[in-house]
Length: 156
Image (tube, rainbow, N blue to C red; front, side):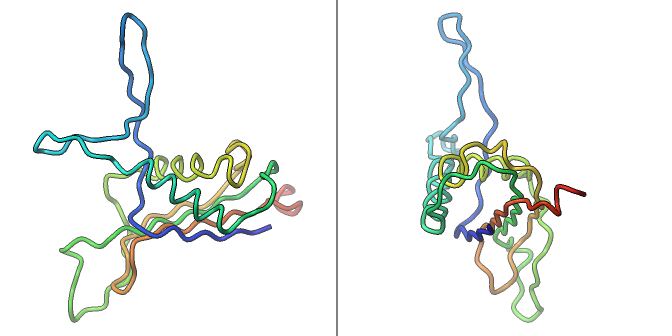
């Protein structure tokens, strides 16, 4: 089984969990908003991106929840910066070395697909992770390829 997903839009990573102590009890939570420089709080896009990933997956996969070893390859394509945009020179994909860590991007995808494609992300055994700036004619997006691991891979 092989499933290809293309999620449109700028990739969003899973934020770090925060801890707060209320009445002597510590509680962990995942932030859903961020503070802008003007002090207003706005959505950090996490819930929206997770919903979009789940929607794209549900549109492309209607089988039972997978519960076998899986390989998940992810390619995140971010927008080009203004300094990387030219009118007359070719604009191929460029490596993305920005602040977003690939493990947080991976965690976002794996968590978003739980309950839609697989029953638990512990079934994901391996996968290739890539981060790029978009080519000149390319829009930001995320590519996810999900594949069951066959017997030949288990023998390696």
